[in-house]
Length: 187
Image (cartoon, rainbow, N blue to C red; front, side):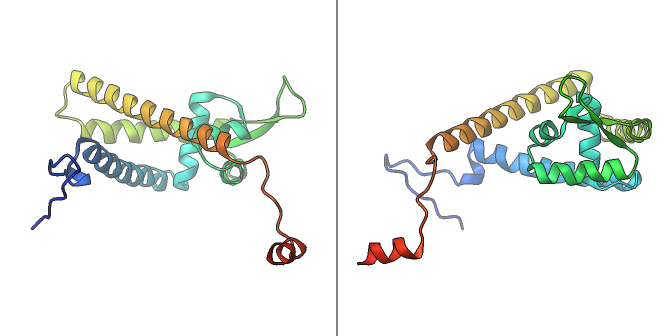
């Protein structure tokens, strides 16, 4: 039996996973899980780590980019992006080049081998999607994509606003605690 909490105004509280936002979060969790499974299956079919598949797709959409841009677009740490790019470079699917606009900077771009892998990936995705959504109309697919785009934009904006807020409220520097400081504080 579910217990029902009471909110201050006397109305019963809705359990978190039954509120509209709770249901949305649960649905997004479920979607993320099956998306990871699908991407993992495609990556295995292509003999790639799943993370590499995401980097390839990002490079395909964005063209040559600097490593920092790879990290930012994938929302991962620079060290993670560097490892993922290194794997693609070692596999001959991407290459690092000198940026024509800034000779000090290096960009990452797809090789012909990377484009070939992506062509095969697109064929697999298209076949999987056609089977998955065979009974959906074009209007339903378009509406679903629009809703997912809207959710993605809202979550990204919230994340970005939170990151800006936390960085603007963080102290510029924290006092360094040394044994001398601790001794002075306890004296």
